Image (tube, rainbow, N blue to C red; front, side, top):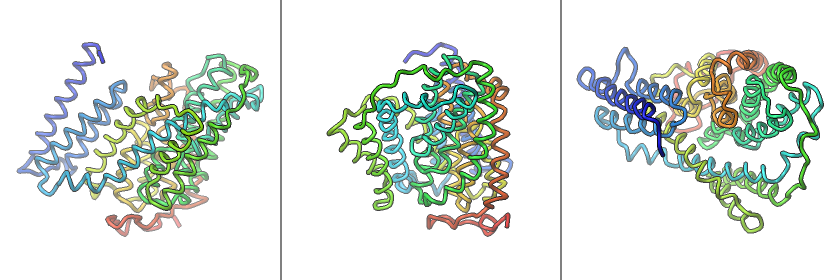
Length: 433
């Protein structure tokens, strides 16, 4: 792959900075790996995430550089760190996550080629309510499809019904709808899938809907009205093709396989791939989706592995305030590693965290995987200024939805779901009665 000289120089300088900071922070004060009371791991992790934000076209290389740099620091200066032991402990989570990410890419293509997305415009009203209805459909789809797939399907439909003229605020609304819908489902977002793999009960995430539904109503109405003024909807733009029931059957088999093997084997990826191979008997499998999904999966796995090496005992205690801040942070830092840190720490109300880190990433275009994927489809969205200016209703909806959930459902932290979780009493106390 060929890069411009300026990009090569920029990434090279970033790598040199990360390595120098490894030597400086890691060797600070006779092997003490802290500076200003904060572990060197967090500094290096922050540099990696900043690099991801700055070099969003080369995120895999930045993430791999950060991972190698962090490993070098840990192996050099942290005497009780064993790479083999760490990989052994994290291997099941990483393998499960890789299998699910690749499997869901196949699932999304099956759903796209079933021709069901082309039927959706027939049910949309011919005014601003049509745009809002499309966001509701995306919200619903994201409950059983990965939020990336839901956003891409929604973006494809929007591209046609709005005659290729989409307001940046409505693009933010599409991303927000996919992230909000996925917050209450272990199949709807990579972060919730990670929680599920880690042992968080699937039903414990359902209360997130108490926040995501009101949030959808707020940003959905505002962005749909703005879009209708920008470019009116045309609902007869598509000529639907016959539904391919074999493709839909494959989608159903993959979802059932994931659920069954999670409960029976604690390994949902096995069910996903078992169903994919079984469905290949009667329907053509879109294997061509795997290479593209693999690059993104390796990027996310690199960040997850980085996050797993953070000294979580230094994080603030789990509380609704911490969850709220993590949601705001996820707007600029990828929510995958934030979720990993929270899972390692334990003691959260996982429904609050699912809403916060899932929906919070919608506030900036690169804050979530769905936002990055949709922005590749609509390059005009790759502007933080335009996203914030036109999508201002998304952060408003985030705050209002969080407060509604806090005062209706209440903060109910869960007991540690893994034996190694050692949570302080403050982390498990009911902050809000």
